[in-house]
Length: 500
Image (cartoon, one colour):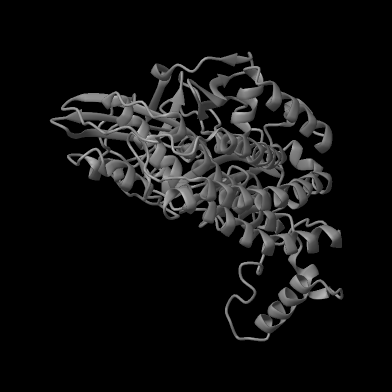
């Protein structure tokens, strides 16, 4: 059997190696290998609980808000704290801004170049100032003696890139504008979070910032700029990618099982509901069915542990038959996909009418059938749709804010207790489990989105979602793994999180 190995897979967060075996012109087997170890769970032991939201944000600079909120929720669960309505809305707005930044980053700056013929830029003869500047820069780069001129646009893997000049040049122009829009989303988060990345105002009990009417209107103005970009560029670009690359509606299926913890608190419920979908409609989430398997991980022992019972893992880099620094989360013994697609599928199955209607409209516009949602194109389309829906919902949270009302309750630690904080990060289901002993952190466990999606094989040798999604992917060996990279990047890997 031939092999295609991508190591490192670039334009992602973290260090990831993808190995595949090729038979009959398609992927027959695949292995997803996390290539680094960090140990956050061990370093949290014995610390003051208030340290946890600060430290866990450092797991990731792309999605730190999710870790802060999940950590705060775990402590609030253990200490019996209830966040006021204003605090919940502020958290939603900070998290929402981080979502928008992350989704735009993923499509334009991490994934789009898999579908864009960058060389079209060199033949541009128009007058668009962005494209003219970009072309002049590219030509000057090529004239230098740099090892990799025009990075990150070139060099690129050879492949079946669409020749449509409107698509290629438009996507490159939007790539540049998206840099500014991401910066605007960061400013939104910093307005309420104090700074970004790694917000300073998210603490157990609520949010410490004082959001007066002027701050909220500043946030709203920036949100509307981001929202216009989503409507004018992001959604149309994803729809055009679906038209130009229709085969990717049938590539990258994965397990077609979906899990969501629910996200964006609105009183006692969440805007996007929790639950699972496994071919039988919506099922309520049962946290007791979650465990992490370390059989294929470089950790001592072959354990299947619920996060609330698990100890900090002990590294064993020479462990026989292990091949990744990721654990293998499972729900009721099965791998589940998490992320924007999972959130939308679960919400629609749970009867969230607005999301269900929007998902149906997306299917009509992309030409996808419902059974094609779990696919490379389906994941990109779901992420864009979620950005569109979220930007609109954030306006409602701004309207619901009550200036001057409390956003935080006093924090009071407990000598002993346990808690869990569940949230959805941009990339999917995120849970933090904490136990308190003598008022300090006794144990701390994180189960993060990319650990679910990029998990290795479990004790039964069942592959993780990305490993199974790669099987059956048609490949042209002359393209050096481009088709494999397209499937993997559609999951938006965050491997520094996954190996936390």
